[in-house]
Amino acid sequence: MPSSTKSNFLMGKLLFLLVLSLILSIASYANVVNTYDDINCVTYKGIVHIMSRVNNLRFHCHSKDDDLGDVTRNAGEEYQIRFCLDFFGRSRFRCHFYLESKQQDFNVYTEAPLTETQPYCYRGDYDMDCYWKVEEDGFYYPKTFRPELGDWIKKYNWE
Figure 1 (spheres, rainbow, N blue to C red):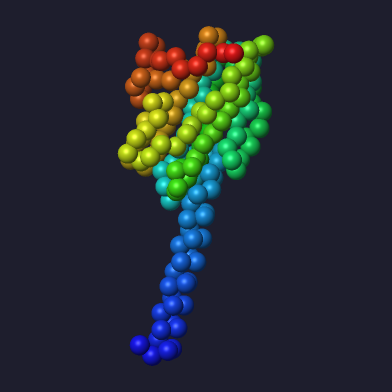
Figure 2: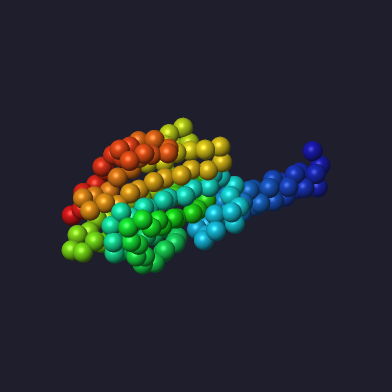
């Protein structure tokens, strides 16, 4: 192979690797947005639903890259975290909850391998929905994708 052809081949490989690394770095950003339809994901779209069944539920959620701030919800209200799943499987959201003198802190979403799913999440063709229900006595996730009244499993107590 002539020297100029070999040089062009190496430059092409380097350019390809640069473009690929740029795409992967963009795809790994959590991309939390207010409007779910505005997400352009290379990977699955994710949404965590936090449903309050108590009044004056206060909480603060964050990921490695995004601080979602302080939130207050009352009975019957829902809070949603909308994001793109990390290309490398590193998506995590943690919330610290407060209700009167009680509190609890846990991961409301931790990404599992594509062949698995968290017990509180349901994977569709291009997205994943995860559910938490907050009650006076603790935190629940659903047994089924469209949970009925008795289809919830208690995961955490208040501390």
